[in-house]
Image (cartoon, rainbow, N blue to C red):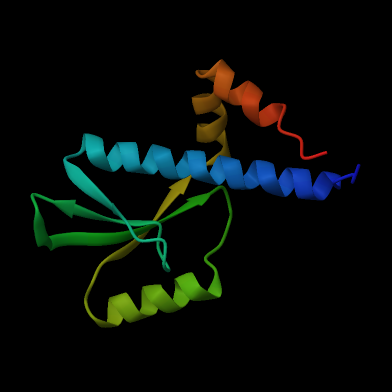
Length: 116
C-alpha cells in the first residue's frame, strides 16, 4: 500500500478547511439577503441582492493568511477595471477553530482525516 506524506495529508486538511470557510461565507451572505451563484473561475462565487445584477459582487474566500492565486489576481483586476466589485472574504483561523469547536462531528472529521 502506498504511504502518503504528512504534508499531503495536511494539504488535504487545509483544502477541507477552505471549503468549510467558503460555506461560512455563503451562509453569512445568505443571512443578509443575498443569493449565491457559484463561479469557480477566479472567484468562489458571486452574490446578488434582490435579483438585480446592479447589486452584484464577486467573492473569493480565504482562510487565515492565504493569498490570491495569479488567476484570482488577474480576475480581480479585470473585474475592477470593468467597475464590478470583487471582494475577499477572510475567515480567520481563530473563527474557524471556534466554529469547529461548536460542531464536534465536523471537527473530528478534519482531525481524523488521513490519506494513508
